Length: 366
Image (cartoon, rainbow, N blue to C red):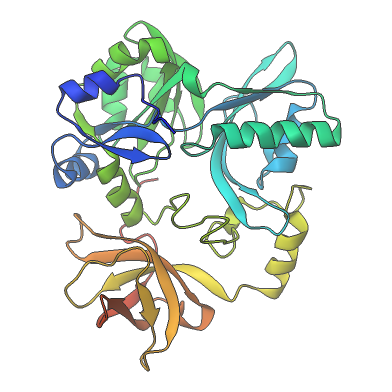
């Protein structure tokens, strides 16, 4: 299958960015170095091209009911200009994907939403929404608009000042998970106070045709997916397809540490299974793991107890540029999930000392 390219593919190539395949897209993995880009976001500000994320719009008389029955959070609680993080689950409560849902201004007096699943999932969830709309007989339009938009993330402690320099100051008054429309470089954009780095920041949607002037308006460090990964691991954020996957890492929101996204008062797909699990408890849980011996924890490495018996497995790992030590995310048996519990990480057949660590690995501003 041919790889998809973001609107700024040629701009990134001219800037010397190295490119990787992610979710079916060819995306910049680094412009200068992962450590340089990571430090820019932690200490000042950086900008990411995240145009590989999916965008699906839902509107109509029963759009709210459709959204509420297909995502785990309380969509009915959203007012225009608000957003929420949620999961999409199947009947057994296993996460299919996580998403951010934006309540848009009403259209012709009816509710409208934009939700953003992960890269390469736009066709899957457009079909999922339409199939359930037909099954339930609901009146709502579902449109895959991924190719119509570019999406950028401006992240870091200096991001409010950088946003204020190129758009209306009122944008910096947005609270966490609020959004509005404003202009950047003369282009109308939707700007949200959201992000995936653990720092204060904004995510910007603009028409694909306006991608270059909007990107160029931000005079700051360009960052690739490499730094995005190290930043989100330090913040303890999940990566779809790696920290959960319905086929290879089937986990529920309660197991994955995002039970706060579950509103059991909503009749969503998977609700009954999750109500049962909340009542009985989980037997494994997502945890942070910090190396005590030298080494870098990686996805797939086995976690063992002090007798060498397997107790879990890593799903993500990196050498933390901020902490200068190996850190990872993974799932362990519940009796080994408390912070401070010693574990071993089996690295190419050799057991190395590590410890269960509370998430996030560092204090965050988001």
